[in-house]
Length: 372
Image (cartoon, rainbow, N blue to C red):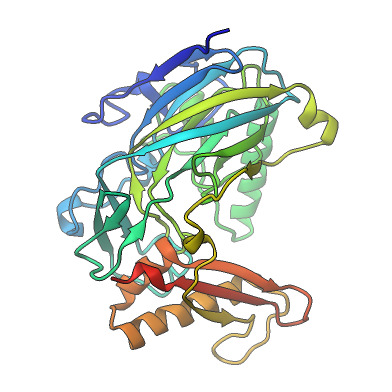
C-alpha cells in the first residue's frame, strides 16, 4: 500500500497570534486538531522559532523585551487515528530541515546560572553548509545536529488538573513553575487560555524535553493520554549542549518530516508515564558525540563558601559550568556572556558518579573541534 503524505504549513511572516489556526502555545486537550492522519502516514510539519520571531537583531534594545507568554509556538495538533489513552505513540523523525538563521539568547530571568548573569546577550547565527557561525562569538563553528526542542501530545483532563495543582503547590512552597497565563495564549478562547499548561517545563505528555539525541533517525515513544493523541511539535534547535544551560540553544524555525506508529495498550501495560527514545545510528557526527579532543571541568556539591550540600547534583552541575566559563574566559579570551553561550550550545554535562557520598560529581565536556 502506498504511503500517504500530508503537510502542515505556516506563514513564516506571521506570528502565531496572527495565524491562530496554525497551532498553539499551551497544552490543553480541548485544542482542535489541524490534521487527521493514520498510523504509517508521512507528515511534514513547518514550525516557527521558540520565541515566535521576536528576536531579529543582536542588539537587545532593537528587539525589545521578549514576551514570555508567546514562547513555544507549536504546529498541530495532529490527530492519529486509532490512538487511545494507554497506547504508546511512536514518532519516527525522518528528516529535519533547518532555517538559514538562528539565535541564542541570555536573558537575566532564564537559564541555569540566572543569578550570575544580569546583562542580556544575543548571538545571531548564520546556518549554512551544515554549520552555524556568529560574529557575536567569533572563532566558533558548531556542526548541525538538528532536533525538536518541543515534541509531545495533549494531556488528558485528569493530567491537566494534576499538573496545575502540583505546580501551584510548588509555587506556594517557593519553587519555580510558570503558572497558566491568558496573556499571549493561543488559542485565546476559554477555558484553554486560563487553564492551559505553559510549555516551558516538560511533563508526562513530553513537551519541552530539549533532548539533543532526537535528531533524524530517532524514534520517540510517548504515552497517549487523549483519544487521537493530539501531537504537536516546535522549538527547532540547530544544535545544543546537553543542558542548554543559558536557557536557549541555537534556536531556529524548522521543518520536520515524521511518521507515526502505535503500540496498542503498551503504555498502560508497562505503566509508562514518561517519554523514552531510541536511535539506530549516530545521533550526531561521532567526533561530536565522543570528541577526539576535548577539555573538561568538574563540579561537586560544595559552595564557594565551603559548605557541603550532600547529593546536590544541581549544585555540582552549576559548579562544573562555572568552571568551564572561567576556562573559556581566562584561557580563550571570551567574555563571560560569550562563554555562557558556548556552554549552552556545545558543552555536555555528564553525571560522572552518584555513589561517592556526599560529593557526587558532574563533568562539563567541551569539544575542541568547534574552534576554528
